[in-house]
Length: 171
Image 1 (cartoon, rainbow, N blue to C red):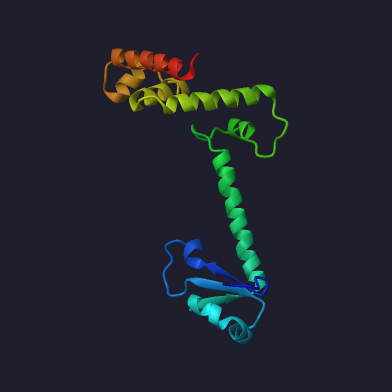
Image 2 (spheres, rainbow, N blue to C red):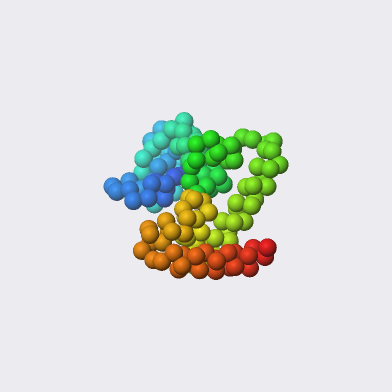
């Protein structure tokens, strides 16, 4: 492969751009002109033909974009909120730059995380009804009407969900 990595770098465009079409699947990043590059490394690079030639500045811009995308993806994963966005509260609880969060905010976030993990372990019907009841503020009658079932069924389901949560969370 490339013994002298300072002279060129090969980028797999098919990997970087999934689903791309066209015949060119490789980019070679170098400051060498094409004639010099092919003279020095033509045999090594023949397996990548056809390829696009990029300058080192273009390659660095490509890498900078890739680094920023990875940072954005990781930030999104770390600060994903199961229950969506709520004006004011979401920014407060999920501040990326805050290192000095109030203790009650940290505790509340830990409790929400534990509750979310518990809800994820409930059967789908119980999970849905708990979310509607506790997070969206619907009463049993409203849930029953929306689902086309009796209030008694919703009540029993929520009672069983609470028992299951207590067992799951060991309260």
